[in-house]
Image (cartoon, rainbow, N blue to C red; front, side):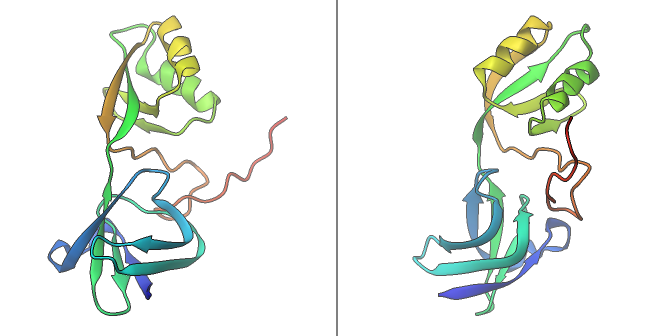
Length: 156
């Protein structure tokens, strides 16, 4: 088994160096210690000091000199849009108030599918559609660097 020696962030990765691609969902890209099988049958060990959220385009450097590109898998998501009232900002607040993972864009919000949240959002006047797309939720205020930190504040 080969060990991962470094994770290179997407903005510094050399795409030409990657000999393989590992396609993972948002949940699968949250790693601390895990053995992963590559397409050629090689097992690699990821053993990080802290849990980390890998992003699309990051690269895993393996001790034998190979590099593996991380790709975000398509996932079943809800796409939230609005044509006026309420504004997308109000919908984003409602979603954030429930501590949901959300990918917030200028024209839409992507969420994991949930029938209760769908009903709430449509009840507020949002348009909610099912889509299959890569999921890159916001890291949040407590994230360190480009990976997730722990949720570290108290609730009343």
